Image (cartoon, rainbow, N blue to C red):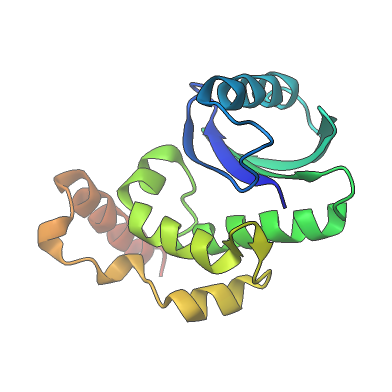
Length: 167
């Protein structure tokens, strides 16, 4: 696999971009140009796969995030999609089904753990989200109250009240 990245829809700057082939896009300018081209081609499309600059790109969006997995033209699209789904499902679990930029930024520790369990140096290690979550053993609920912002505490309280009313 050549690179994996995700981008925010409100700006083209990537939240976490990793290029595993340093010869592919050697400079930061080349990387930003590639990311900009990918984003402009995919941000309004309803597809899940794109081909650009000899690369196979699978992607998924959620609220204000786009998740991309990029491989060479010879990569198996189903395997790339499997990696993307594993990443998305694992993050969805960690972020309690609230996959959006603010929650992702608030839980970057868990995000990095998930990414490291799925891909290492461009090599796919795992494509089963249950296995990733078991290895990571990260729960967003484990954060102590002192590390949570007031907004997070209020959001958590709202969710608990909502669920108690629905029961």
